Length: 351
Image 1 (cartoon, rainbow, N blue to C red):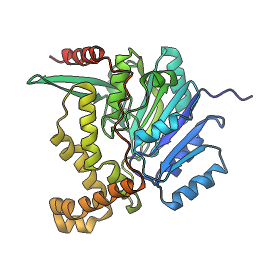
Image 2 (cartoon, helix red, strand yellow):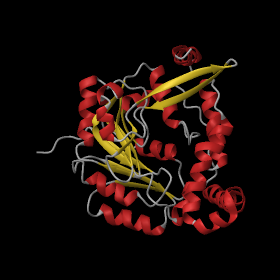
Image 3 (tube, rainbow, N blue to C red):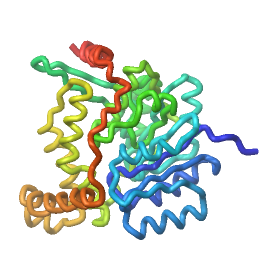
Image 4 (cartoon, helix red, strand yellow):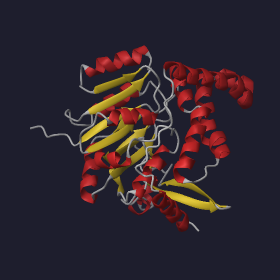
């Protein structure tokens, strides 16, 4: 006997083209056959599109293709419009799913009347070893009258065995404030109240969603028995660099920072972010594809001679395929007093 599905799974690109086939095979092996799945891709290499269409012959899913590279939030919005179930799961295309992950999220939402639920996310390969995210907290601090909002990943980089040794339930309680877009569940009616995800954001997008949910007094929880692995440590290949460098381009990153600051009336340390996590991410990815050039040129020259031109070409490829739409204020949350009260509350915790 089949049951009406309660959840639609939307798969969107994170930073590569290539992992999607493996992610889908893992997904299909761990969810009921009747669970709707929507895969959104844009300008993927021909061999990947061919493999996606071949995979459709073995397990039905909706494939939505665009002729231009799509950012993660663009893809999530496109996929969410196809969903008519109670819940939507947003998952990136570089995730490995463990058996029972979806049922555990649904059970958590029912048990706790949650609006959003985060699974236990590992970082790998290998699977189920090093924790990346076990729920988290929103933080804020005031510096010279400017408010800076950040997040804390609970048990980040702890081995699961060591986490159990330090009282896992105490360190990662069900109460939660933030879900990572690697994989997370949201009630469709909450997403409709929030409006579309802000397509200007390619960083801090999960924090933006968490703050919007907080403004609407939504309940967010964590489910330790739902387990997925973010395959961040897989080796890069050159066919992925076009999407990677578009997605993490300086242009989109700076636009994202400005949009987040404008949304919430806060500040982001641009230099720290651009030269830190985003800059290191780009050097690591491109250097893995051109290791000899990286060794010969050194970090600064490698960025100038190799990364910057490749990034420019990647952004131009998107621009030629589609003029970027104008900035959209997706603000049922345009109530400035609610926004200000939310940020002030966060800042007050850490005085």
